[in-house]
Length: 573
Image 1: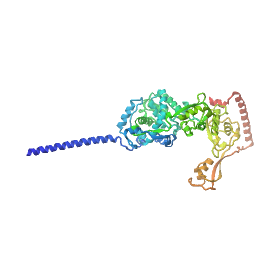
Image 2: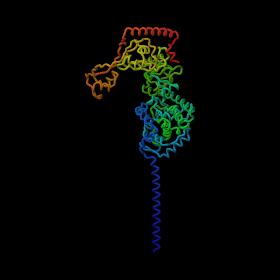
Image 3: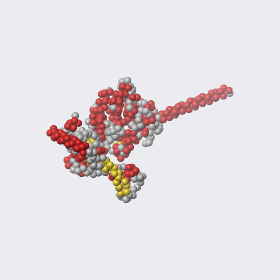
Image 4: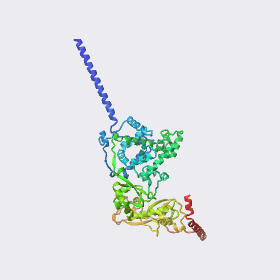
């Protein structure tokens, strides 16, 4: 009996041990499954700026993405419904997957094997991955759609300059594929060229044309610049750093790091923004290859790369001529051709200018090309005349003092006159008259004037007669008309609503009453000439002026014989 009891108890113990072991095994499996699932939970990401504090200023990549909210190219109307690419992973539409550091590191390591870039994963890269994959994922979806427009062009040009194709992702870091992006420092376009660098690589920037907004010209210039930088440093990450900060700052960082030519070795000595530049580039490489794993579904843009075509125009042409003859919407013309700032396409020698159109209009344009050139509208004619004057003045045939200066088109505002405009651009009234072929000095609001600023104005032979006296402020009264507001009155007089409110002790949101009288502050230019303190002083000045006028007359005569003025020759040298 005792043996039976002992045997029974032993059997019970074995059963308990088996049950315990089974429970432990089930718990272990459940724990492993939980650990596996945790890497893809929709957890809210840390603030990437806080994550990498000290390596990236707040106004860098994150601010570029923030600025796209109001950018024309990122408006919802230019995009269609999201694609269904992400559905192959079975994620719900609003699910935001995230992964462990080991997963990110493994994936980036796989990418590094396929590229000459030494892609690595670290804390800085993690911050940017979360920026693109979590915080700005809706913007990333639109950027993915825009890659279908720009990446074929980028890849073609990069390949022709023997640059790794992964360099196409640099444009996302620079501008988020916004062709009209403008940085606070003044860099413009897809590749964010500064004015000086763009000019060095053959890009034109004027009141009519901004080549930095031309995707093809800017891409070619970027390829040339990147190739030149790589020839200096022999390292693609240092090339990226120099593209962002300039070769001078990179050379300084290399010297401070003891001469080591390695991006991570000189990282501490680079400008703050450049420290986050390469990590952002690595993060974009990752996101562009693993967006499906993050449940980001590309949003297709309205104009795909294969839905538009390029033509060359042989003569001066305006958007109005194209729109009013073959019906291309003006918004599409501006959308596809942002480099033509005023809607005028110049004729540039035998090569002509390039214009992009939706494909359905290409055949009509080719068939009716001569009709399009012949059609004239009042608005287009006015701008064409302005462009012709600018080109004439740039060539030196439109009057002395214009060549070599930066030309602009100034739109006359309410309350402005030639005197105030001349002061604004540091020039003379006489020059404004010559540059614009004016018959009298009166100008009207909305009138467009060609101006050249920032140059030597010594060509004015008018003496004191071409100059205006001091500016005085005068208070005039305005009677409020029907439906007028502070804003509309401010526009009328070329001032601000805030200034009107201060002048009249009003709340700027206050509704005005018809017939109400408001004080308006206007600038008045005195036409009085300077008075002289004595007859001797006045006579001396007049004598000096006559001598100067005589010298100028002789010089002008010699210049007409020689073809150019001395001051112009000096500037050209």
